[in-house]
Image: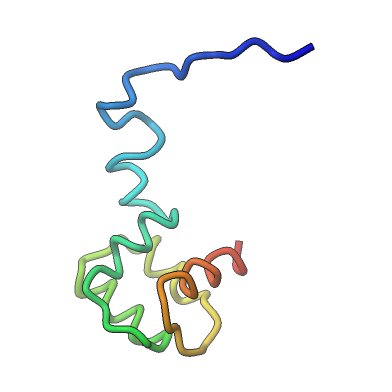
Length: 87
């Protein structure tokens, strides 16, 4: 027996509680990506923090980047992997 399918609540096209602008201003993968827009890779942890500050990222995002391991990040996938490691 399968559970009954349920439609998502709210209008997803209007940027509800999940996704949209809320996600890009948070410590989610989307928020980290937005904070690092324009970064040249490979980059160090210090470079990631500097770029986030240049992009006026919120303090929460910068604090998450400060928790990243000190290493070179060659791709955005490496950055997303580091995010997964600290969570």
